[in-house]
Image 1 (cartoon, one colour):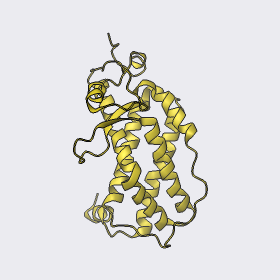
Image 2 (spheres, helix red, strand yellow; image 1 turned 45 degrees about the vertical axis):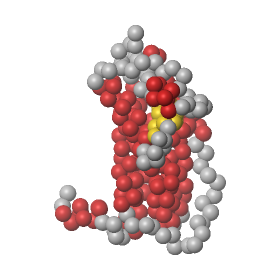
Image 3 (cartoon, helix red, strand yellow; image 1 turned 180 degrees about the vertical axis):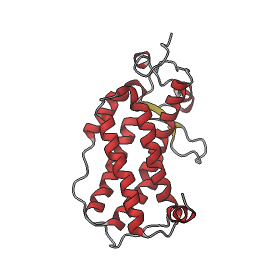
Length: 222
């Protein structure tokens, strides 16, 4: 990449129209890819593809975070219509991921003594897709600045933290697979539980079940 292109790519004062095209392309690519992966046509490659797509989305998020505050042209957000229904996507992802869907995360690592909480990859990705589609409605309606404002705002308020947590979970899963280090069976960790810090810490690493050892290329857990 030339110095000129590199400077344009990382400029905090980049022309909003050019920046919007680049970000919208990255976001639309992610939404399309996640929708296709969730169909489950190639379950053996689901985790690597999810890791790739989530990593690329976080690059777009990093650029939004780096950019100066984006202010919409209108004082109030234009009504984009009904929110996107992502329940089918959520259910497809939950079936695809099965026992590795639930993971643990610290919501705010800078808040003292903040306990870890259980979350679902399927929930976090589906919610992120809903946020991203909301901005795409603005973008395709010709409201590029409003789309950028929404994506930047929702990056800081919602999908930035949850998708980065999903990225860590996926990277951890693939690390255990590639290094041939299967984990013990998940034992009761669920998002419906109100787990204390000690109980969750004990169970946090147990995120692979015997049922997925074959499809994911893992050694059977004995």
